[in-house]
Amino acid sequence: MSLGLLLPVALAALAALLLPLLLHLARRGDMQPTDFAALRWLRAKPRPRRRLRFEELPLLLVRLLLLALLALWLAQPVLYGAPDRRAYVAVMPGVEGAALRAQRFPADARQHWLAVGFPSLETPRPAMSQPTASLLRELDAMLPKDARLIVLATARFDGADAERLRLSRAVDWRIVADRPLPPATQEARPPRLYLHADAAHAPSLRYLHAAARAWASEAKSWTDGDPLPPTTATVVRLAQGPLPAALLDWVRHGGTVLASNDATLPDAVRTAPLATIETEALAEVGRLGRGRVLRLLRPLRPDALPLLLESRFPRILSALLLPAPPVPAFADARVYVPVTGATPAPQPPRPLQPWLAVLVAVLFAIERWLATRARRGVAA
Image 1 (cartoon, rainbow, N blue to C red):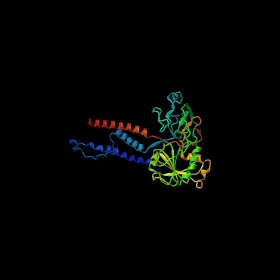
Image 2 (image 1 turned 45 degrees about the horizontal axis):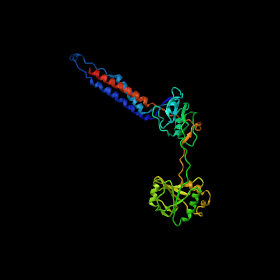
Image 3 (image 1 turned 180 degrees about the vertical axis):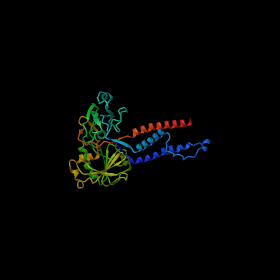
Image 4 (image 1 turned 60 degrees about the vertical axis):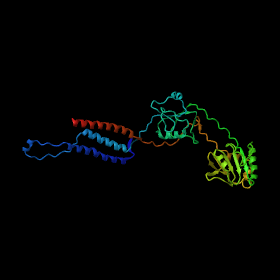
């Protein structure tokens, strides 16, 4: 173990030690010599030299020590090489109290929730959804390499990521409670198309009708004056020029519109190319309120887009129009057991400022007691 200072320049505050020294020296002026009448007949002798003396020496020493500790507190002392090697128990928020009490831990083990900030188990239960994988990596970096880590996990938990969890230590991984899986994501239904095209784009509608039949669906005709469909549907508008205001307002409420390559989009829509897994980008997409605006990058003609004549076009068009499914965030604890092999992180030093603050408070109380006691003695 060794001591260190994070801010050694703060030791310049030790110059304040001169203040109590000067104050105690100045107090000697309160004592005035008094001449007796009989002393005038004595032969004058040289006066002895006055020695430098400090009055109330215990009070002076306490004040000097108090100022020295304050300067040391400002320098932020730390202790290297003294990590807390007690066992650490991390409990997922889904673990119930009965399952927790049934476990056996070392007598001096620290017990905390596996949640942001690692609150103590004595605090209220945190939210179930936590970045579990990131928290375990952070905890592994915080603990010394020889500290034991015990994790109480539910059978399923949130907050897993795609990378296998690799830590610097072997983890005592205990699955102590079962948590039901979230409801399975239903298979996405094919988009429902409402088609509109001007005279120049009318020949392109055949390819969209063919894609709808491949989905076992039916594409309906729609014009700018018709009532707007539900926001779960997709309006395909193949026409040159700006989109109607009513259609844009429908998009803001959650609808999806696919416009032709020569359509004009509002300035508020910032688009980016949207590619599918099987082909290059066919359209660009932008957000407008809660909905999406897609614009084709090429005309829907075989000479400009040969993909129209391929059998995979309906599947690619469906992937283009449907929003991406949410990525599952839960994991099975039985297959998510952490493995070893990560490099241990260097341990941070332990701050000594809290202990110095307690010592400063005690010395301040002693200084006040000595100062008031000295004043009472002078008054007496």
